[in-house]
Length: 160
Image 1 (cartoon, rainbow, N blue to C red):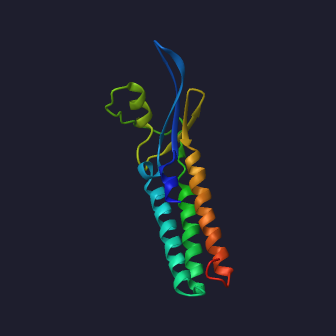
Image 2 (image 1 turned 180 degrees about the vertical axis):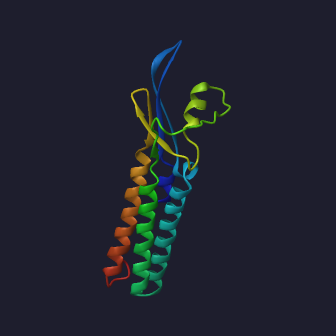
Image 3 (image 1 turned 90 degrees about the horizontal axis):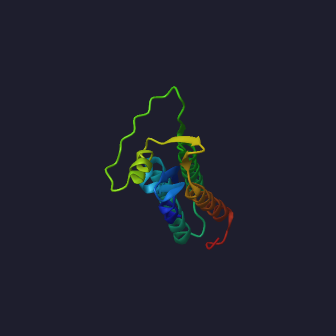
């Protein structure tokens, strides 16, 4: 589940045109590098899953409070991921972009939309900024961990 944090959770796709031609480029950032809330959600889920597995290995049946706390933590993780998907940037908001010193102007432009914990979504044919496919993989991984915890909480066998 922690591996999903290295996938492209945030993407910037933009049009370019230069001497070699034109097209679209996509830059991405991982959950670890772009959002504190997403990082906390992944770490919380990993910790809860590890504690739950330890409780199940130590005892034949984990206490009910352990199940309740584990599912509550999984719900908090899902909320953290779902609520921090970036705010839409509209014409009335003021946006200041910080340019990154880089060897290519494309990297500077893309990274100016990837400011940690300042995620703005934008959708235009020449510029699309928002969550990437890694976000969905992370959400599914967290939900699968919650499902395993729930299934193990109802089972009388220590394995599941």
